[in-house]
Length: 115
Length: 113
Image (cartoon, rainbow over all chains, first blue to last red; front, side):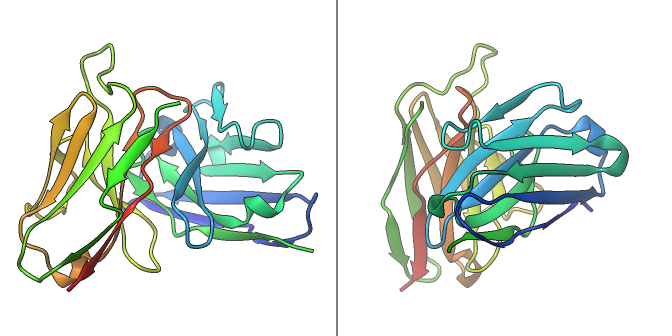
């Protein structure tokens, strides 16, 4: 069974940083492209970032480009999102999703940006 | 960027009755390989999204056959033949034909009348 478990969220001040993690089990992680998608409170889904199987290719939404960094460690079956220079509007639940077609999702981790 | 527009934004349906959600894209979602990368997701209250349909009309494993997807080009539809209580929540369409960015519709909230 595919399982994706996010962690690392929390309360952070504007301008601060966090590192989000997604632990993957139940599938061949190294063979799957991965994504981060976020959802602000009471709002819809917003794609954030994508990474290829090897980590050699990445893409970002314009809203986070230059501030967020996606990475992965295939030996640890883990996906990461380093979120920097955080703004109020980055407050959201952050989900990791398996595959370019988002076939499986984790339960999410909440990032709250507030002073 | 491809804009995905869903309608209606909310839907109130009697149990056992059909429901239909429309998703329109700002440009054709047919990719150069001939496939159309339009997916549908369902998010129950307090839960993470779950994919229901991929490439317009393919149901994911475990998805009841009362759910069906159809459409082509820029116009797509998700239909529920007979709504059940567990179908409440928000439905999203998503395209990854022209990306980045991958884009979602605004969501359609389904409730039971």
